[in-house]
Length: 93
Image 1 (tube, rainbow, N blue to C red):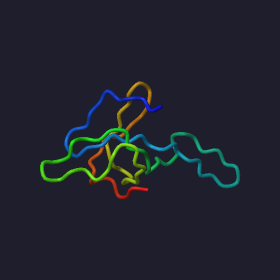
Image 2: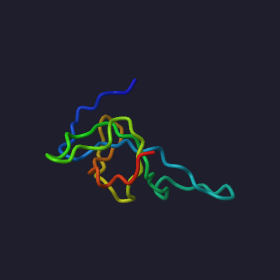
Image 3: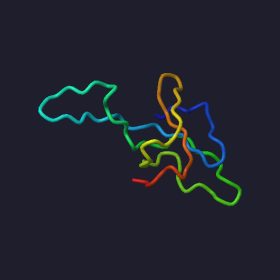
Image 4: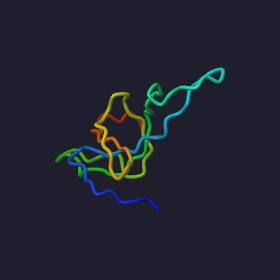
């Protein structure tokens, strides 16, 4: 059961929960958490109402790919999320 967020993004913004970071190591090298690449995919957990003449094309529950430096990081109840504009999303997967 998905937990309801106490945050509502405005206009064309969405809240995304990033997928877990993947370890990319060859030969058994341990990569510290600070050196791991941030994931560029996640699941939309909240959407805004859209702009006046531009409704949003994504919806809650969509798995998406987004730009490497997209969004503003926030933490809600110990879970990290990103708030970004819909235009920062490059694909629905």
